[in-house]
Length: 241
Length: 242
Image 1 (cartoon, rainbow over the protein chains, first blue to last red):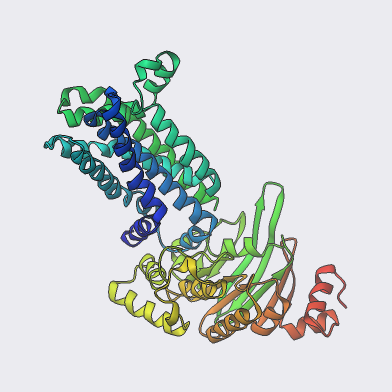
Image 2: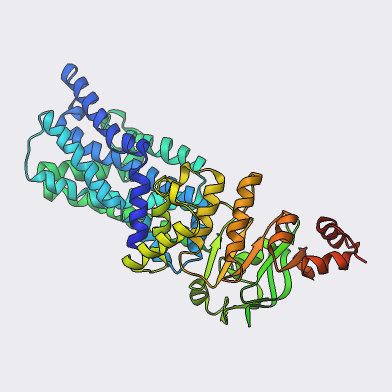
């Protein structure tokens, strides 16, 4: 499995587009939105709110990376070749997903380091904030496994590359306060995990650990559901390969 | 001794019977070509033999192991080079070989030695550090076959190995396959008649999931009463044999 995991990491990290979007794009957004904040102060763009939020937005690219790699492997018949080897279903599932966790942690660390240069206070809570990204990252990575198992490479580009990144951005409360829109939009956002994941990150950075649990419960529930569905979808495509 | 024993192997997809009661034996070290038009059942047969899909009924023994009850054991003695090149595009040629050695459970030392030996055997030296996705079709096919051999399989499946290659690349790949003859039991599927005639010890012709004819290229030409192998194939498939 280690061998296969290593291959997953290499395939993702050697793609310059992945590096550009995965690490570069959240950093550019932090810089851009902080520049807007400097000229037109907006509370959601304050760096202690923006940086934790951007770590969650960056996770949407993990879904894209995982889904694209799996869909490509299916279409190129590399998976078919590997299914004729002694590797087990667990080897494939962990081999595709585990290498993304260190990439997630690096991405979160890069967002916070960028924010330090923009005035974010360096506290030990940053470490908690980086660690608390893990439940949300499990949700996004599992979503990648699910999409990669059922969608073509082209569909992954549209659904994970365009739709999911936009949903994560709009429904997370990173770009604008959900209260400003209110109504059905806010209700829908509250039912989905994105804004809860952002609040977990913001609360961890603020050291408000007592406030984390309700939002963390939402994120963990979504992560658990995503893991179950993604494993079932992967096993289904494996059987029908 | 037979490397492969197929007994009444059948695969049905809802109302369609892709493979219909196939009976066949392949000797150890033999290069056996499966020919047929599209939809004849060649790929489904390969998929069942390589444990990618389960038969609806029937059985096949590879090296004495059952594809139905011992798929894990079968996977340890086979190597598959799929129709598509099936390489990891962002890994180098050497990394692709090492990846496959790793998934077959070879140790670090064994992996290094095996990957190096395959590089030499398949003359991959000049591209060994290049990413597989950047290689020409011919090099990718050569790498694909080398990857199928990383586990030192007893039985090798080559599914359309020269599809889409130019004449030179095809000729070079034929040399590669010839070099394996006798060392491995090889099942080759192809659409190219001259490839089957040139490389194989015996040929099986399939249509509608059934084996229509079986024999050496010469025997099949005699069976159909034709001088050219391609004409013999067409006659057999159309049911115009002697």
